[in-house]
Amino acid sequence: GEGLQHADGHSPVLANTNPAVVAYDPAYGYELAHIVRGGIERMYGGSHPDPNVMYYITVYNEPMVQPAEPEDVDVEGIVKGIHYVQAPESAEGPQAQLLASGVAVPWAIHAQQLLRDDWGVAAHVWSVTSWSELRRDGLAAEEHNWTHPEREARTPYLTDKLSGSEGVFLGVSDFNHSLPDMIRPFVPGDYVTLGADWFGISDTRAAARRFYKIDSHSIVVRTLAELARRGEVDRAVVQQAIDKYDLHNPNAGESGTAGGDA
Image (cartoon, rainbow, N blue to C red; front, side, top):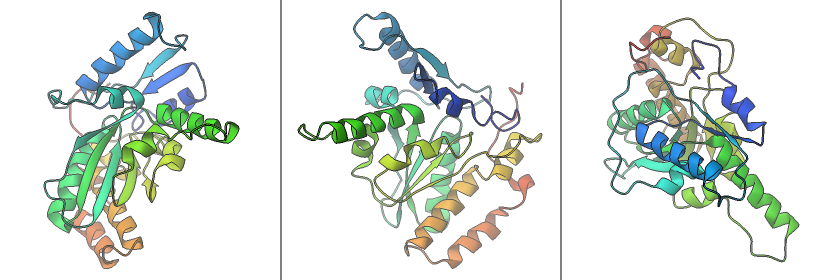
């Protein structure tokens, strides 16, 4: 599912249109292990109410350092679609929540560092393993609430997960805007997205991600722009960041590795 070079920015979006497809875009090997185990248990364990499904999992051939599984790993969050992966070193300053999936998670972590070091913003990083499962859960909660007003209202899993989070929310993946846009109704705050829309581009991974504005520096600038809109940072900071990172130059991109090319 490399959406950048191979003009596949939409396959997880299409997967969501089939109710029998459970789609995931994991970032790390330990996430993949829990997703596969959960899929086997669902399809063959005999206890799930809806076992008649198929799984679509986007994995990447881009070499990445794989972190060890945390001791307090949130297995439920991984299977349901989102879990918290990295807190900022300091909680001081304007707040941001970076929601990333797949190979975008390392770029979100890099953006977290840049936001802290260059602009004094405290960013929190979340790994969204499945945008579509979060959307389906949210839609199910909405339908339950309006069709059963006599019953206790349900809160979407994503809304509950993010309920204590402050600041702006940003969603990013290696795919179209429409993928992170899936969860928009259930994000409890101001939410912006980045995405690899348009036709495919033949270039390095780093240049392609810069071209589509989904790299770490684009995450930083988009976060600052939303904070500026809210009055939490000066608007001049946004242009300063654009100039500092040479944002409009694809050759200045850094979010990509060499090796593992198809």
